[in-house]
Image (cartoon, rainbow, N blue to C red; front, side, top):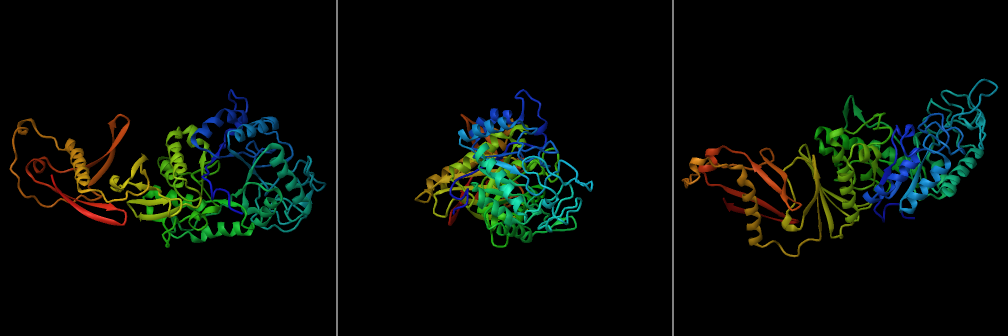
Length: 513
């Protein structure tokens, strides 16, 4: 069976943040607000909508589930939820439900004074709680993961528990209409149970939140995070290789790369992406922030001024990318994020697109990406501020750019090398772009300066700058800037040597200015 997102271009959208359950706006409830926003999400290219936990909960946000069968929550009623899911599906989007299977809050105390009696349709007792629960006295089996102390940890080895969870998941699937699951706190119990639940209920896919810490030496993030991404891979393996997993390795490495300019962190020793998406891309779900790492909780937030660099990376690289509600609607990044999604779809990039990392250092990151090595559609991503761009004469067109990132695409490689006349035109365009930065004083405008030989000037990353300017008529142009003193500009003759890269070939063009 082919993994979801391997043969199609998918983009997931988290439809809520940590404050959504407190919504008091004109729509009436959060589900009805989402009904209003659904057409916008379809417009920017969202294919999967991630919904919050829908069941009754001790906490407003839904992550302390209580009566599982009661699907009235702070986000809206069961009827509101069902209508919302129907609207999204009619627009062609799959709907993913956030499920909290690790723990459940009791509704009554037992005879010994412990909160171990569960109400509602699934009226369990202390047998449903693991016997090594750190806060509650269960009588079930020993736990199979890392338990939480905030609520009773469920014993998934009990047959009656498994039977009821499968029944509940089928209700979400077939009554409400959900297509897929998020597995909250997947570290809390063995992945094999997730695999069993998927086998029994047949979702389009599921994605687990297996979140543990990256490898550090004190406060320094280690360059090699293979152990971290391998732990995520091990969890997927334990779940019979059925679910996907959120790529926390990529999030951590990408944050540090963008924050500190350490772009070398984005390449592993085999020239692959350094995150989980570098070793098992069809199972990786990449993201920038969510309700835990960002929003008002901000447990591990992406640097605010680097968020679009992050999206430029995940929306052009392997894995299934996820976009966060806050960034589109609160931060007003709908347009630039939508441009990147459109490029991903146009290039036909799926979770297993191929990446050739051509540069990853302290100055910048450059990678060529395409869906299969024989696909003529290709893109280049550049992160950082390196003075680099692919040649327009080889078919490359800049499609979008922002602070610290740029994306170029092309559809096929020109069959012939550019003619010398075309190279001459390219050089003339560079000269033309330089002219505005060589002002001539009024008293010297009519003078013909005497040429003299000056010392060589080299255009390097450190003293040459590229920027985009408005060329009118909705077009942009790339301008190269190089600063030197006015006397040199007026009284010297310059020779510019450009190295023109033409895929596998390169040549140096020398031109007098």
